[in-house]
Length: 103
Image 1: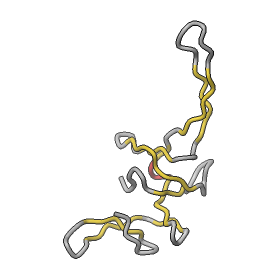
Image 2: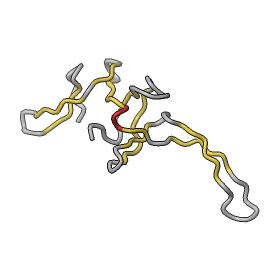
Image 3: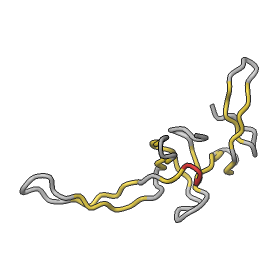
Image 4: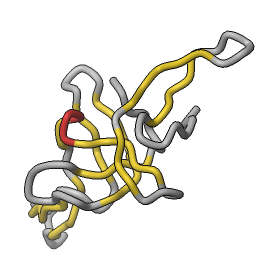
């Protein structure tokens, strides 16, 4: 997957198009990511024990990883990912538009 936990991304399609947030969790088997402040829904939770009241929670739900692009906070622009090698032979991720190295 082209994104990792902790990356800053921008949503490029869907209801939350244009929103920028940090990746909180990744579900690699389903190619989904959970982005902070994106795809927020209300979930009604039933009471677990007698005498306890139910709750209404707001929670971020996953979106497909193809719907996000890495975001440069310095340049304020979203970009695709390129992979390159450093002088010491390490493979790093780089933003194609700005040339900024992420890892």
